[in-house]
Length: 353
Image (cartoon, rainbow, N blue to C red):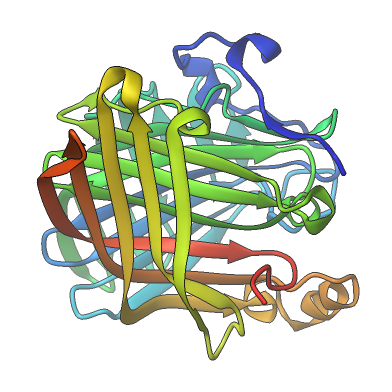
């Protein structure tokens, strides 16, 4: 059984405070490496927008970069528009977030970002201004053994988004809340992890970012908990490995992915020493925003190869409600409910039997 652990900042030469260069390019053009800069936003009319800048497909075994940008917009009526840009013209800065692929770019300094996307189907220009400090769990690097790692940096756990989106001649003004994170690693995730749940939500004055990442079966499905709760721009929780209790409940088997999906996820953070106790519960509704299996993600030919190698990839993005409960002396003193979206990502056979 391998050693799976979340490294402390000092172990890899980082400080406790996130630095600007950490949102710059962190990988090289090596086989197995990958990197992406993710942005999402939600709006009062119920619409949402996701833009992701990739150095290469996350399933690529190639050595060089194969950059592309994807855009996914869901309008207030639930209609989804997907489009992307591929280009051999690109640049990635190592000193700061300054990613350019064709005419598209994302650039920023942890506090303020500019995001731009353009192709023949859509043009989008946005600004993102941070309202919650940049944060990472410890160093943000989860090591699987001595050399292989996955890294995650929530550069903007929550911020204000302003801009516009033009699709087929229609211009849509966008004003809402947004999120940006940065992910990278030196070995394909499908070789290191079994599955994860990830979610974020704005609940009244609170913002939560949460995840539970399971290693492979050979590593005993060892889990890495991630949990950050902030209120009015101040981070309230920061030590999930010590104080978080997590539970998945009320499983159903999805008819398309054939996966067991927990209808309820509970993140219970209790730090008795500092009198901090919050419980966050995600509760799945009937709506599924997105469901994919391996052939949907990588195409049928590659999916067959992965299947023969033992992989069972699936992605499930769902919606429902999130409930925040604040406790004092074991009693609930505050309870807030809000709409939320979260995801389940799987790489291997179902962990739940």
